[in-house]
Length: 166
Image 1 (tube, rainbow, N blue to C red):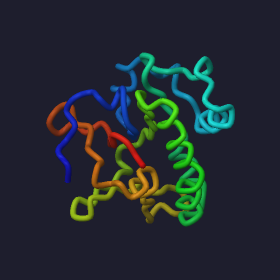
Image 2: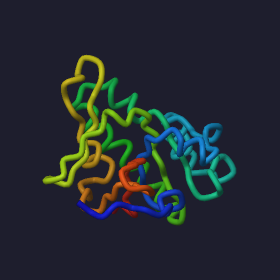
Image 3: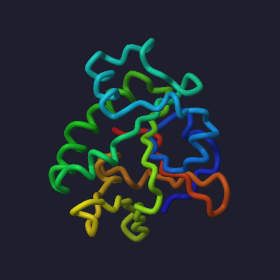
Image 4: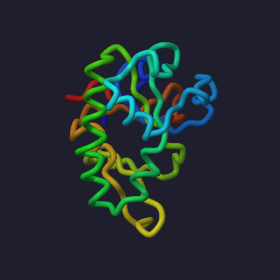
């Protein structure tokens, strides 16, 4: 495992998944979080800067990825994230290379860290609740070796961070 990220670079750069509600409140981001649908619309509109509700001018927070993953059959969800979401992450990163993209997934109890494999999974809900989804592989396109736990205080894990995907 990589060392924990103890500073706040994740608020300004890279691709992150955040699940800590207190941190969301501290960022004063609740009214700026956009839906996954809106994220897709901004992509289709070629990322119009005047329509993107940046947090502190350098981060975009998106909610709803977890809901979509849970709504699909697990194999379909993998295909959808790898083929649809990943391309939009890359596009955002290319357009705003000095900004953070943060996915809000509120239920921290649904995370599974596989330390020996350096991978991260998401426990599904609904009829697939006994299965996991390879969120790390799908979001970061297999670059999980570069993922770091966001841990500003020892033992207080806020999410996951990757500096840049390719």
